[in-house]
Length: 463
Ligand SMILES: Cc1ncc(COP(=O)(O)O)c(C=O)c1O
Image (tube, rainbow, N blue to C red):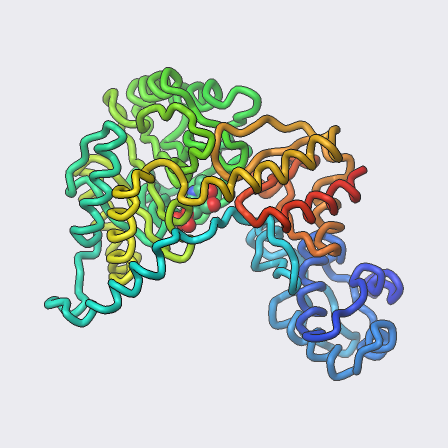
């Protein structure tokens, strides 16, 4: 059967004008974005190299290189006699098509798809100190897989300051929070088990569940976040839950102290392990009264921490804090994954944490003013130019959740991408990839001027 053709004029309009340089890469990246946005039907034949070269005003060689690169990324099928066709969706499912890998960033674009903060101001100085003493290590760089003592000590001190006494045996250092979530899931559940997580929620929590071959159960947290998680855990129908009660991503909600006790009681009663992602716990830039960690009350809890927000996204250092018994199991399991986080980064993290404590910076981001300015940039534009978007001021954290877009969120995202603004549509934050067709997450971790520009583009598109 002949495959439908994307007409040359349609594809040229979708692609937009090529940039002055890096045009083969641009062509591949644009095709990837369009495929991810569902604008190129799987199986459709795309115009010939000659037609594209003519229409785009590029040499045929450049077009061939761009199309070959798109083929290498899995966007186009290999060339056969009938020309090139768009590949079908990958087996990974609809949400995967929305990720950075499937839709690479165009050069010069503002990236609102992640919440990344400026590094801690002492990063370079402390890294230089660590580097200067590296070769003095009598163990020649070998270290326990579950974390070096200096870092574990800092992590224990962090919990002690938050009112949760913790011994070194209760901590396992990991390569970032996501690997900690993965280990915690492996330690508490079995293949095929039902594991709850928030909807909307952090996309990688759902991914950890599904790649671990557990069944993801969405917990609808809007409008009553605390009530929804307590009900889901209290139902007894979950083998475990991955939850983000501290400045939830994407809504910025903070679950209060009373609600935490209620949740812990429900978890203890039903025997449901709670995997608590505390990655954002330090993002208390609004100065909320912080409730204690979700632990105690007879519940089995595994607290997951990360330094990606509080110190530097490049560190890739996280941990699990749990009972000694569970920590032993995690330490054993991790040997089947890797043999520890890199030593240099662990030493650097330990030094930065010690420095942060001396500065009295525990629980408040080092770049509070930056976040405040960025938040104001986003919310002032929302109030002025997008009054039909519904959102609630977050208690803290690094993003807000906006509903009520006039355009379908995927369409809005696709159009924004053409104007150099990379954004995630609401569906990405659904654990099943379904729903949130008129919602977007707006992070306010980035640069103020870029955020203003991004908001102007969004306001113009969704008038
Ligand atoms: C809730 C949540 N958990 C985990 C992460 C990622 O943590 P890490 O970089 O330590 O893997 C993020 C990053 O945005 C996040 O928002």
